[in-house]
Amino acid sequence: MPDPHADADPSDRTGLTDRDRRILELEARTFRYVGAKERAIREELGISRTAYYVRLNALLDDPQALRSAPATINRLRDRRTSAEEPARAGHHGRVA
Image 1 (tube, rainbow, N blue to C red):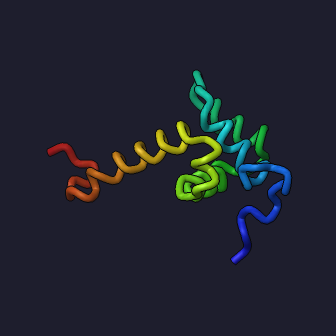
Image 2: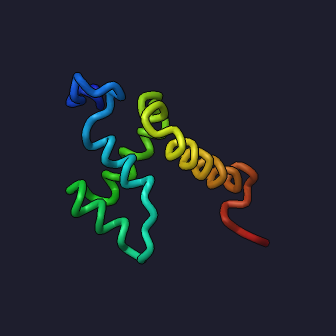
């Protein structure tokens, strides 16, 4: 399995790739309009929405990403955990 940090700049203390840093920077931003984030993903990163979220999800479990952007990573981890709780309780998104 290839090392996701293989193309990291050796002088970069975070050990993250340029794309990973840009993903974290984009994720820390606030978007005011519907579709603005997806457009930024395409235009600024040049990747699909699916590829963005796959990589972002992997970054949530990466200690180097946590050191680089702790507020963003912890906020997203909390969101991921709270989204998983209803499924664990057997609600599966149903209210009644």
